[in-house]
Length: 434
Image (tube, rainbow, N blue to C red; front, top):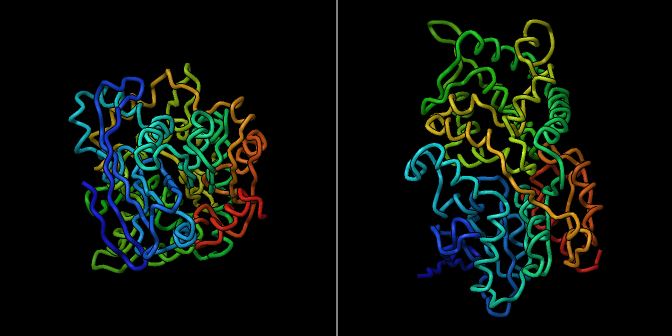
């Protein structure tokens, strides 16, 4: 049953769908998908074309808007918008430590999770499109990982698309997980150095916190074990527009005086927990490296962990032994996540099996992309911390007709931070108006 309700300037409608877990076995097990339709108040949705929004991640449900925020303001001018909770996220048959035991053993859980990559998400979109559009193609807007999904869409089901819009999410068509992280660590180091140039006082603050944790790892609310490595992973925020400022304000409140001497403050521990916990998006940790797995013979095998060993500047112990700054890490998942985070700890064996898994299929079809006829545009952020700019531009050249806007005005979250401007520019590109 569909339910409609209102927010300022919008009318929202809930939609639920049932799709196969494995689209190659349509008569097998099915899962539920949830999506929220948004239409501008006063507009007749029957007169509007559809825009499907695919969130970044993997593992995040579609953003919960209040009214006409960010890019949604521009989208509602021309479209009825569908905010899809990709399979396993949000209200779409959620996948987490509480639900995965229903699948059985760790091996059975890993087999189940192999169906949560971009290929399955695109087939989900194609399965629900006819019920919503009457069979007409729709415009897809993909942010970050949603852009990976959109590139997959162009590779395998371009007949379902009237236009493809990608923000910060043009993936390499061929790079292995190792190659993705070899390119990532130097970018993350540049973001660290830029942060320390902006906030030079944070060099000593980060060193002091790391030294404290090296002697006495802390327990965050909920039981998360804050080690030096976990502290370094706060660098995840450095790729967003205000991430450097967030990190600075967190570090400045790190210590308080107590009768027993200096201690990490409750405010710092609470703030760190909010940034580090995977309780709300465990799929991100479980299938993140699988997003880059395209060689049937090669497991990802904890690529970020292995590649990090070749970048010694990220070794906090060496930094503390000398006078170097402690560098924060970025969008990387490591085995220690599955011992430090209580929301992931029960899934450690499952994660190990996914890291060792082979048989992954290629996600993109370079030949089909080279013959693309769908109007497509992508914004590529200069020195994006999460998606390598060189990889994105190489892919842009490989997709026939794709138009790019390369900018350093925004970081990876430009489609949110830039309000309507980013989407407006992409639409102008696909409509030949820019």
